[in-house]
Length: 294
Image (cartoon, rainbow, N blue to C red; front, top):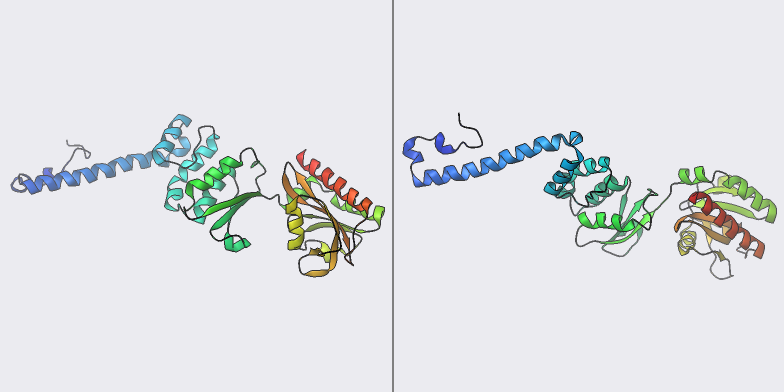
């Protein structure tokens, strides 16, 4: 019996054709393609059983499939996920979807924003993740994963870690009490925000503040990572689209170098905060940042 791998078209052709030079050449060409397909079929059986393969075999499979950013030190579950996604990564290489898929499989969470979606420089993009495991120590690994599948004409502007409001509130659920204490101590409106919106306020209507998006100017204050006090020049609105409330004092909340939010003293007449308010905002922001670290 002739095995399928060894079979040639010449075995099925009449002798008068198989003996012809063109017949032998044609049969050899078909056999070559046939063997390539059979080799792929064997690999597919391994690919389908990736969840049952031992780790040593997974490392070989990753090399064979040229899995991007596959590291021997990754957890076993991550290795299996990367191998399963290998064909997707390469078929989508150069697209936003490829970057998100690979980064999500390695780090658990990632969102790509093109330059026109956030007002950046043409040709650039940024990646946002809520995975707190992406720190300054391993951000180089994150960048390398992005570089592996992004298109060559695009440039990574930065990797941004954003802690969602529920995580922030869960870690410092006493922000409301802190705002109440700040208000009682100074008689000023006190508020705390995360990267996107106000999460606590005292001394003013909660309807006017809670879950309202912070203004772009206040976002820039947070990105500066430094405390500010209104100096009588350009006023800073607290809420996007609401000109009734101004920043008197603002102190960003930082945790291990990441921006989590801001402690704010608010005025309704664009006035400068007092020295006490300035010091209190800095102290509370530092305290909240340390709570997140612990």
